[in-house]
Amino acid sequence: MLDIMSKVEELARLKQEMEEDTSLPLRTNETRLVFGEGNPDAELYFIGEGPGFNENLQGRPFVGQAGKLLNRTLETIGLKREDVYISNVVRFRPPGNRDPEPHEIAAFQPYVDREIEIINPPVIVTLGRFSMGKFLPGERISQIHGKPYELKWNGKDVTIVPMYHPAAALRAGAVMQQFVEDFKKLPQILEKIKEKNQPKPEQMGLV
Image (cartoon, rainbow, N blue to C red; front, side, top):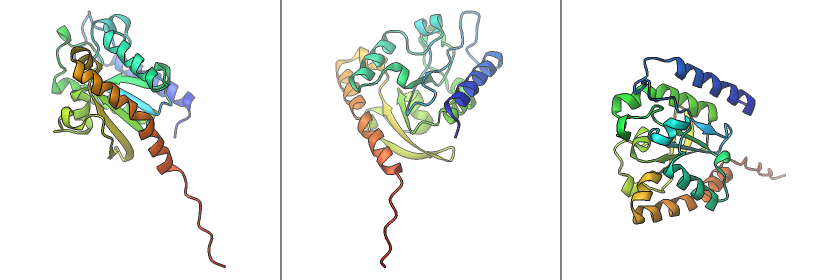
């Protein structure tokens, strides 16, 4: 397990590699790399779809209206943006904010996987169907949002919590309500994981 300083160094190295990888799709003169940001030791890793206009402008994930909603909703469960890690399945803005295409997601996948391995979060929250499809292919977000799924990913136990993308919540009141309710479940999900991972006291043998 990496300590926090090692994680910071590994993430900086990964970002540099992505900056230099000219084979990555969606890279143009108008786009800039939007790497993940947040606490490298985070227990909650949020992964969305791709950068939009504001994200491309600032070079940071989730800084537009959807990002502001994400920040506010985190505060309702007692967390700040700096407490978690926030990322996307593609790291350059798709033209016109269109959906990322399968070959684009696949091109960024090795980098995304390495980022997750470095941070090693117990819980991954997928925001929207494209990041959900990475871990739970073939599922429908309307049927499984807010439910924790325990699975083995790259040989490690991880809990996936699929949620709607905050941009979808901004467009529809019913989705907004579900988005907020799903967030409220996260502290309890984390607590259960901690309880499960606590070493059990050895039972006293009969004398």
